[in-house]
Image 1 (tube, rainbow, N blue to C red):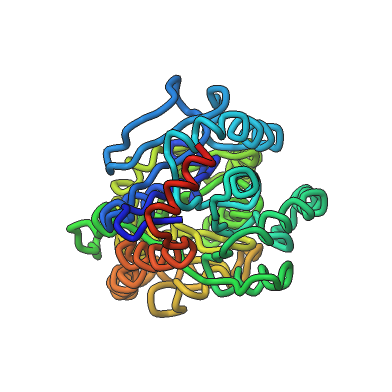
Image 2 (cartoon, rainbow, N blue to C red):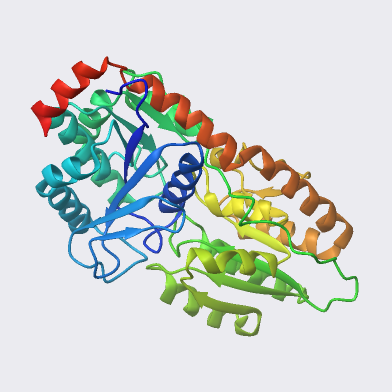
Length: 406
């Protein structure tokens, strides 16, 4: 609840935040940055990647860390999700007293939304929940473990959603999936964004006499992200005698060993460079060194890495799944192929390998389309939603409420 002359204070809660995790943490970071530019007082509560309790971020918001030091930055397991919930709740009194938020923004229903639910019940602070993909029941990536997880967590997810002031999906397709799970709220759509001050095209021209076209994959090495499909596609290219490319793989995940075995089996070791997990700050230069970005996902909400690749002026090759519909225009800024179909991905890659003119045209279109997803625009949409979620009170009522809580 906010006095009309007071600066809006927002606490963002996400168990992932760079250097931990993937697109969800990236979304939190850049949204926080651009909300600060709009005059919002932003704090972020997240897992502990370093041996300290708080940190003044260079983009002018405050980071608060909870939990034991996280040793593995690339993955999070169910025990760690539970640990984050209980640790955040244990310190909630100090957290709320220190930050005094008017609103809490939870990224993912579990575990972050559990903190929002507790804070609402205990401190009467409203919260909104961002649904980003795999946290939504029914998000089917072909992994039975995720389906079991959602079955077990369904009552908690429903409670988090039902008590949220708003539910936000990051794409139209994810909104439809959210609506199948819960009809209590009107699901709002606010897409992911991209910071075009950080991710922008390189000053380079496509060279007709270049020996190799640089392909790039950045994501977790999991079944959902389709790394095996991409490696098999490269094997198909080799069998056809198409060799004018190099593939760079950036990421970590449980399929890393399987990926290397497949690379050896297909005898394409000379074509693949593995860089492992890279910090967010390292990614822009990696994008700008590439010519084509490829993500063969089984399912997506809205992949931040695709927006980043587009902003860096790369043609996109991605799966024909709903999560890419809003960013990929077939034959305009990239090509699509059926997920889990290495042959179609090989055909798409070969088509772009053969034509530098097509790559150049798609690169321009990607950079242009990325401007539609600038964080400046996205942050304004969130600010409007925040303001609707916070009740404006006369100052004396706000003071009485603060005494009761703090």
